[in-house]
Length: 177
Image (cartoon, rainbow, N blue to C red; front, side):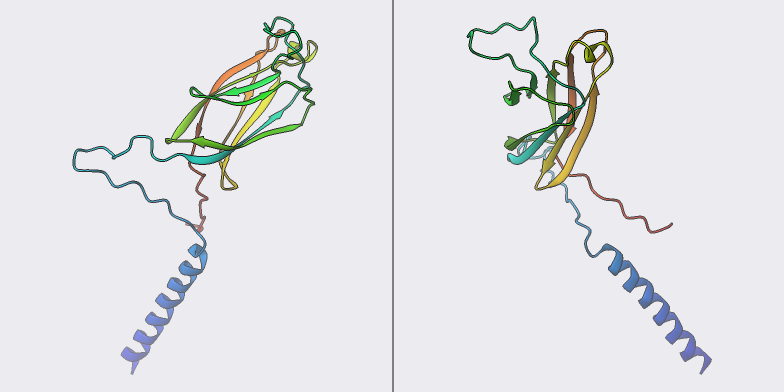
């Protein structure tokens, strides 16, 4: 009789642990890596293009660059520019205020990461101190990568290159282990 009771208690404990684990991970999405071909590398190096959204938030007021060269007298200089190797993703010629979010959607990007060149011109007063610019990249509403770039200060404009991942960040599950 004790033997049967021990088996019933063991099954109940293991079943409850299994049910608890299933309950904790039922909404977790898993990303499966591409299958590697027999030559040791994946078939298409960059993969298909996926559509992303880019959000840029300035931590300063942006103005015209006094040294910018424009070909057309009516054309305003670019105040905030985000460019990848292949294309210009965001070019803002209007006034930008501190905390204003600028976004570009429907960006066809491919690969595992993208290298972006970010350029902005803070006001002369704000350019004396380091100025932040937040760059965020989303896919299907999920955050892929974000980075805050800073200017050097001392009157210089912000000009940096950042590398951002194109896959959404996987959420970690803390099981208290």
